Image 1 (cartoon, one colour):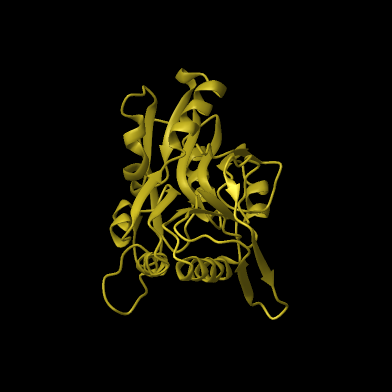
Image 2 (cartoon, one colour):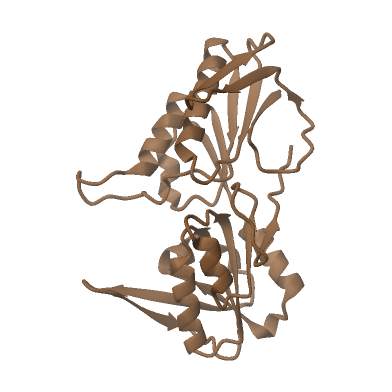
Length: 281
């Protein structure tokens, strides 16, 4: 098996042999991909990290690479992308709005990718859109280990910022003895009202979520937690997008730390710590 590294955000030392190729970037924005060896019947593993603000460019790059691989009759393509864009568009109630998760799956399916390895898909039903085998791994077990190492068990409460987050991650806590709380959102025509289900008073709140984008939801959640007299707040999230002025907002927030994975290439801050994805090669 040989590998292709498409801007993969990791300091991992690859044990596989790298495919001999060239990927040219032109000033007009186009990409050109070419190989310098025979790959007929080879198994190829593609590693890709999406860059914030360039999701669509990265998707085009993937399609160009896979087109060359297919035309050279490779045996198998495995795609390792810890974060997949558009997965928050996982449902629609009519034909007037986009279903981005279905489109991203169709792009990958058209690339003839045999196996997809990713982390913490926003909704489990997205797996059904892919033709190839899907390994939807999770950073939550790593987060739990980190929490156990850093905090006194009796002082903390695990907080899910909404019911969707709870449904994705709660299964990892079934054998743990942490206190659990959920922030319930009641949407009206004019506003979103939040209420905490569970006791958080005088505890360290540990918020668990899959994606932080603008940071608005997490910051609003922290405000209601402070109203219920938590001692301090820490956030664990697999994918840190931090779009627009999110970094500025979180640095001004009352949240102590954001602990994220290196699934994306994003901005840095003194409030952000990284737990690297553990890739078993």
